[in-house]
Image 1 (cartoon, rainbow, N blue to C red):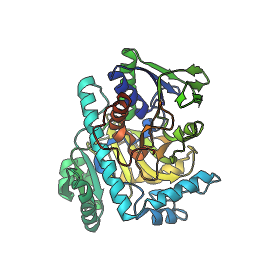
Image 2: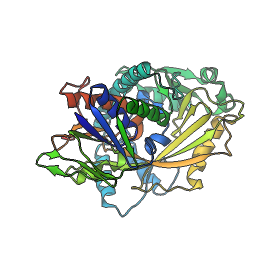
Image 3: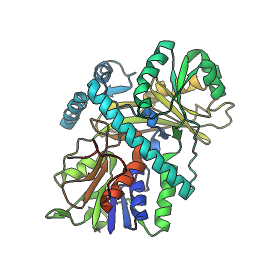
Length: 414
């Protein structure tokens, strides 16, 4: 079949790759000037099943309420004229019960772990260089009480097969000497040794190049404006660069997915949650980090991609606005520089803000939509890089009529 993939982020490109492996002709339509130029560019770069806890947790309502008065909150609510923000937020809050948070976290972890296994197969086959680091991820805690609470919290993922190791302060510093000067601020950490990191954009662009080498087509700078249909089938994708026809279509437009879906009568509860990141050159720094970490007290993540650090933080309920100003990055920059004072050239930062496509459950929508030849692969939220490969393989299996390797509980739009 000829399959048109709508979206050239990591989700769209991995989907096209898996479909091409199955023998399909693929075309990727991307609105920006190149693939992986949106959320796939500025993310934390973490392949982190150990970070599968959903944001719609029992703690979230109070954090959102506090954020109205204090900007230093991990989740921030910003009042908007967009009525969809309030409808989506209500759906999010309804998922914040202990039972729903537990269920959604376990479903999310299952997809994340499966996806990592698919990624590892792709990496072994394609030998793509993307600043990969397989030493694990440290989840740092600032007090002994917080560490003990974190260990108890992590037992949920451990019960689902997640490997964890609890480290005291000395063991943390022994694992990464770059944290030595911040040791007095760290009580210990949970190490997820099977988590990993890598530059998502670098990987995605290299994979896209392989797709083109094998006969696939990528059309960049093509804004998709509609999906005309005839009966129960999409007939073509309309863009400002002309129409593109296929036998099937995969909607993988990230935060823009619900806008296009509405044109064919599909209502997706996906809303953009704004995130911020800094990319900082290591330069001549004496002691850059050697393993990624998440400061669990401040919810700031730090990854190293070769000669760069990526620092990410914040989830802002603010609509489709991607604007930012230097003051938005002061807190996260301070946290990173306190943890790694000799880790990077902090006077040379590149600031970025982008949109995570979030669902109330924090689970993506995968599989058929209302129309027979339209498939969804959207709504991956804050760990889209982690879940992308498994989601792509699931879509390829569904298109081929095969049963996916994992159950589809919680992952369908129906």
